[in-house]
Length: 371
Image (cartoon, rainbow, N blue to C red; front, side, top):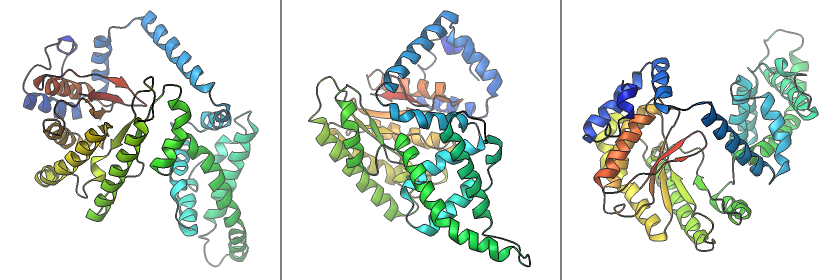
């Protein structure tokens, strides 16, 4: 592990890329408590710094909240079911997934799987909001009714349970659809790129911008990968058309792509195959984006794919498709123990290409590089 003194040294990243990659791998198993202590020392911030950052953040949040009061009831719900609870995580998963449920049977199965095991009873009456308490009882009853779908044989209540289940499912399913649509709209900008662009326009006029991220990517076959490639290409085309209509006050929006969506075997064990096939695919998208002046960002993957993601990024970054462009980016997970060594690696990569890196905070992430 790098100690605080070395991490403060501006020349720490000015070594060869292989050495920097080794440091990234070494930090995979670093002791978190010891490493956080080192990072706090590197931060070298005092109470005034934290107060200033907190005040600026609060002012930004307040400005954004003034734009749309419709989020208030959602906030009340999320305050009760926060992401550090089992129930909160289930709600977030369901909010995203329910927007794309194809049929009744799958909807019922998802509701049962996500809501059945949760301890909704512990949240009853814990909020002053009528909406939260009503939602809690709905979730509580949903879990109970759907779990009756698997009663033990031989019990007298089996017939009644099945009857209640048949009567309750359509009502429950419709209620969950409506509730999850409301929540989903807070986290999902649109069902496709055209709907997302349409909902973006009001904030474009105020100088805000977006990086459009396709949810739920997971290529299992080459047909899947081809479909996602076409979707990304289509998104780049549509964003490119939108860029031409924006004012000079609005930063150009970008498209975020996931490497695992573009190759069915995106794993380190297939390293040579991935580098031989996936790099060419990404170069095609980057070339198209460059032609249309649309920035492209490679999204983060699971931690065990970090090294191969960096290899793909480096190969594309050093290709003629990206050289001298300045709009090819990489997401670095700021909460990862390997974030700082990754940024060292990217700094060195940019330095070797004669370009400086820039960093920007995102939602739970750090956009570690946009050349």
